[in-house]
Each structure stands twice: as structure tokens, then as C-alpha cells.
Length: 296
Ligand code: ADP
Ligand code: MG
Image (cartoon, rainbow, N blue to C red; front, top):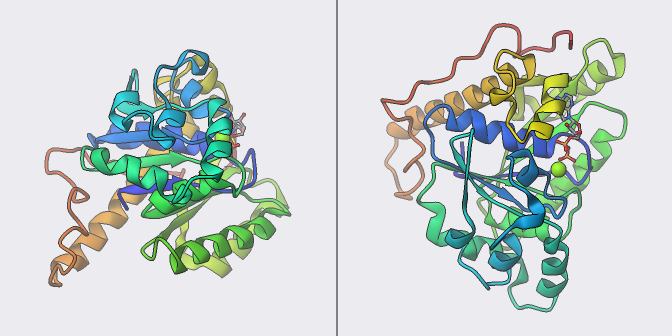
């Protein structure tokens, strides 16, 4: 698991915000220090954390424009056990004003520098567009997590995103990795879902998360209570699926750390803060949610 993970897909309604909020809560439940950053003017992640986006003090706009330190905008999320850097409609104005600035794609990266080290994981919820806000997120990120609904046009959008990632790698952020592709709102009764899922596995192999997020009404309800699903119905299939996703990320990180332990650490920073702490309960993958199963 990389430290800064951007949750991105230029398609709307694919489960970016649902994934960002619920992954933040699930990782926080394993005692990791988590910061969720709302980079979408819709402010859905902010509202989903129970924070009123119309009544924000300092927020992402101030941080991006350099009018406030990121630390001044942070809010605790309760219940949740993580921290939120909130955003709202003002981000539209931020994007317009950034256009004319030098280094406009580097603003988020610079703003996060002083607080990066305070967290084990920073999760950025991106808007549904390949715009300057998403660009800022991808430049600030170590990896990209791509939620995908397995439907007909899904793969088409994916190639535009992959080439954007390539361009960013070739220019400002050479280390940007694909964290993985996450199948969301999965309905195994739908033949097309299964076909698209098979194609994804063929093209992207082990870059496709084994965990599949089922279509689950509890996941859709939770934001209206301003809570992650873990605090709305922790036994629901949606809650178990996001715990399983956190478990999968952690397991991968442990495997990478084990391989890394055999090799001289040349970067000095590669695994700092990402190694599991002995006191943190690790999340095991619950039965039946890692593979496509019937949604309720
Ligand atoms: P995005 O951020 O990519 O636009 P959202 O996470 O906001 O997508 O999801 C779009 C809609 O679908 C929201 O109403 C959300 O509650 C709902 N939703 C997301 N994931 C699921 C799921 N696994 N099961 C049921 N509803 C979901
Ligand atoms: Mg969203």
C-alpha cells in the first residue's frame, strides 16, 4: 500500500467516493492513521463523513490556493477514527484560479508535504473528470486506485485514464503506480458484469483487486447518515467488502515489505510507516466477499 492513494476514474457514479470514505474508515479500524482528502467540488466525501459542506472554515480551496496550511483545514471524523480535509463547491473557483498559476499541477503535492508524515495513508477522492483537480491529485499521489463498474463503456474510459497516468509518470511524477482496479457495485447475476470482469482480469491480471464490492443498499444509505457503512451496519455485505479491501491492501503491503527486507533499502523511505505495527489487529478477509456473490 502506498502512502498517498488517489481514488480516480473520470466517469461519475462508479463508486469513487463510496470507496474513498469506506476504505478510510476500514483502514482506520486497523489502527492506521488515515487522512481523507475531498478533491471533488460535489463535496460528497465531506458530507458522507457527516460534515456540512456549506459550513466549512478553511477547506481545500484555501489549501490549493495557498491561503491556508493543510493542517488548518483538518477535521476529525466521528465515528470513523480518521481525519478529513474537506472540500466543496468552492473548488470550482479554485480550479479556475489555479489555471493562471505557475506550477498549477503541483499545488496539492506541496500543500501535503508538511502533513504527509503524520499519516500512514492519505486517500484522495477525485472529481469525475480528468481536470486540473484530478491532475493535482495524481501528481500528489504515490498510486492510483481505480473503482470500476463492470459495464459496457467502462473499459473505454479506462484507456484514457491509463494514458493520463503514463503522461504524469513521464513528466512530473515518475513513481506513480497503479494500486489496482476495483470492481464495484458488482452484480454476478448480470452476464455483462461477468464478461467485463473477465476482460479486466485478462488485461490487468493481478492489478485487479481480488476483493469485489457487491451492490449493497447499506452502502448507498450510509452517506445519508453521514457515516461510513462500518458505523451504519457493520455486518452488511458492503461493510465486510470494504474491510476485505483494506485487508487485501495490507496483505499486499506486508508481502512487499517481506520481499523488501531481503534487499538493501536504497531509497530509505520506501517502507517507512507502511509496515504493519505489531499492535494493530490485521483485518482478515471475510468468507464470501472476496469473490463475486449474489447482492442483496
Ligand atoms: P462516484 O464518486 O464515482 O461518482 P459514488 O461513490 O458517489 O460514485 O457512487 C454513486 C452512487 O452509487 C451513490 O449514490 C452511491 O451511494 C451508490 N453506490 C456506490 N457504491 C455502491 C454499491 N456498492 N452498492 C450500492 N450503491 C452504491
Ligand atoms: Mg464522487
